[in-house]
Length: 191
Image 1 (spheres, helix red, strand yellow):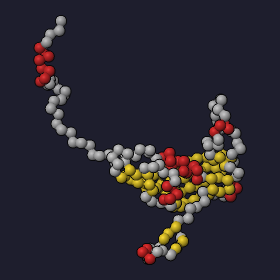
Image 2 (cartoon, rainbow, N blue to C red):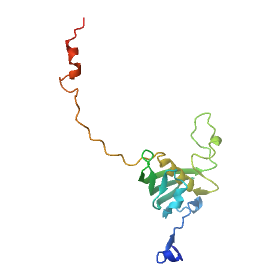
Image 3 (spheres, rainbow, N blue to C red):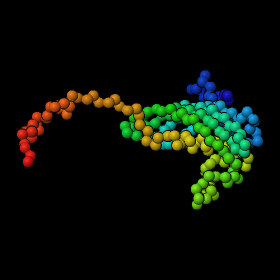
Image 4 (cartoon, rainbow, N blue to C red):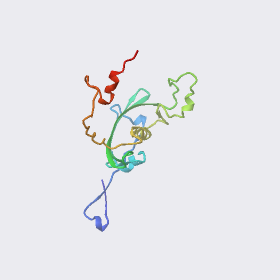
């Protein structure tokens, strides 16, 4: 933790700066036991990946593990953060917890062993899917950011308002009772 000298009005409250861990590693540096990243990322890190109605209310908890599987790397991650938002229906503030369990297999960028339908050119994918290991490096940040964006509801709503209390019905279709407004229809005979 870095400590900086604070302005006089903040004296006694040390400023804390979270160091963002590297989310990129050379595949050759991943040990047999795997590569582990356990960190609290600052709210400013996730802010770049939030849709307009959202704001981060807490640091982002990241628990990431990467293991080599042959030439590929399996990445497993848990991402958690508390988000604030403006309800798209009422305009009232609300909160939600972003809680993601992610799994992805990163493949070497030069492999063309993709299971694509006939007529689909793998070059047209521009390397978007599947995720690739480029120049021998595994970079999980784009993957994490994409999953965070996809997990957000573009039109978040606050908790539902309580259901209105139902008033007693004037008439119900239960039983043999007939609505008195339709009673005269009983006397009509159809031939």
